[in-house]
Image (tube, rainbow, N blue to C red; front, side, top):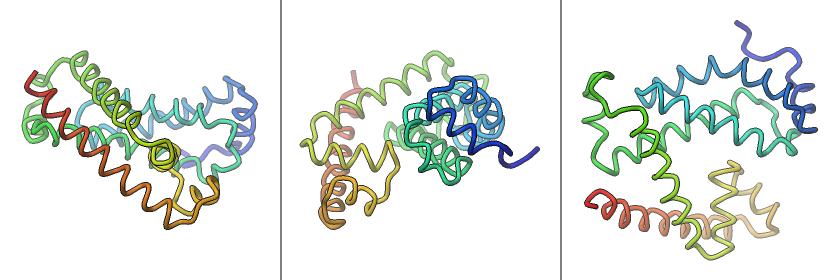
Length: 189
C-alpha cells in the first residue's frame, strides 16, 4: 500500500475549500494506517477508533490552513500519537494503566465506559484550560491543539519565543495541577 496519496496536495486544497468528498478520501486512505498505530499504544480498539476520529476532526477544523501541511502523513501520525499518549497518561494518572495493560481485552471495562471515561478526561482538560489567563490559554491551545512550535506561536501572537515558553510552562503547570487535584477528586467520587 502506498505511503502517501498521489493527489494528496490537490485533496488538501479541496479540503481547504470544505470539500467533504476530498476529506472522505483522506480518511479512507489514512484510517487503516492510523488505527493499528493507535491500538498499539492504547491496547484498546474502541479507544483507538475515538482517537483516530479525533485526529481527523482536528484536520477538518484546520482545513483552511491546509498549506501548512507539508507532510500530512506525519501530521496525522503525530496527532494520533499525542492523543494516544494523552490517553495512556490519563490512565497512569488514575493508577489504572498497569491494570489496563495486564487484563485481557475481554475482561476490560466495556467500550461505552471507556469512551465515557475518555470524554470525561477531555472535559476535565477543557475546564483546566478555561481557568488559565487568556494569553496562557492561547499559547497552550496553539501548542497542544494546533501543534505549533514555540517560534511559530511567537510569530503568530507577536511575542518573543521566551515569553511564549514562559507562558507555556506556566500553563502546563496550572493544567497539571488542576487535573491532578480534580483527577484525584474524580477517582474518589
